[in-house]
Every structure is written in structure tokens, then in C-alpha cells.
Image 1 (cartoon, helix red, strand yellow):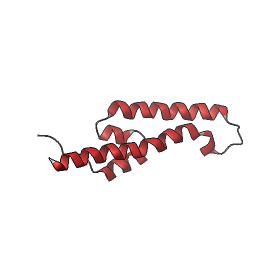
Image 2 (image 1 turned 135 degrees about the horizontal axis):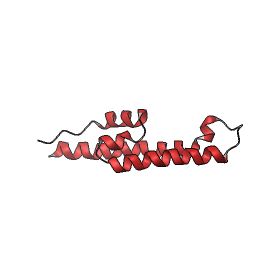
Image 3 (image 1 turned 45 degrees about the horizontal axis):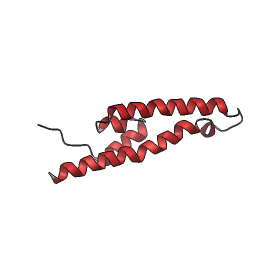
Image 4 (image 1 turned 135 degrees about the vertical axis):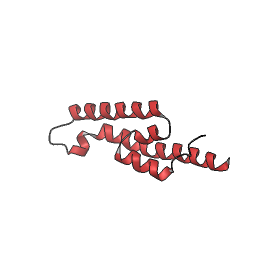
Amino acid sequence: MTQAPLSPYWVLTLAILLPGMGHVAVGAVRRGLVLQVFMILGAVITWHLSNPQTSLAGRLAGGLFVYALSLPEAYRLARVRYLSASRV
């Protein structure tokens, strides 16, 4: 017996609260973990390249950029799986 896919909105909420976990919830575990690594790496790089007077969001911009790109992707993956399961 296969498990019903999660709602795309639930996956999006999970991805917002725990970066990369939306991908893990839909079964793309490796992708979610890779995104987490790149979020941390991007944040560390921009933290060290920015001035101390830069805002916190500016200092973490590299990681926040990857985070922002991961949200619609997690939602899209969940929506595709949810719609394909509902058609069967």
C-alpha cells in the first residue's frame, strides 16, 4: 500500500519553516540536503565578503538566495506528485 502524497501547501509550509525539508518530505532527500549545504555555504561566503556595517540580511544574502529559490521548487515538486497521484 502506497502512502498518499502530502498537500503542496503543507510541503511549502515545511520548506518555509525548515529549509530543505520540503524536498525531503516529497522524497527528494538528496536534493534537500544539497540545498541545505549550499544555503550554509552561500551564507558563509557572503558573511565573510561583506562589511560589518552591512545588515544581517545582506550578510546572509547568498544563503537567503538559495533558500528563496528552493521554496517554489519544493512546492512545484509536491504539486506535481499530488496531481499525478490524484489522477490515478
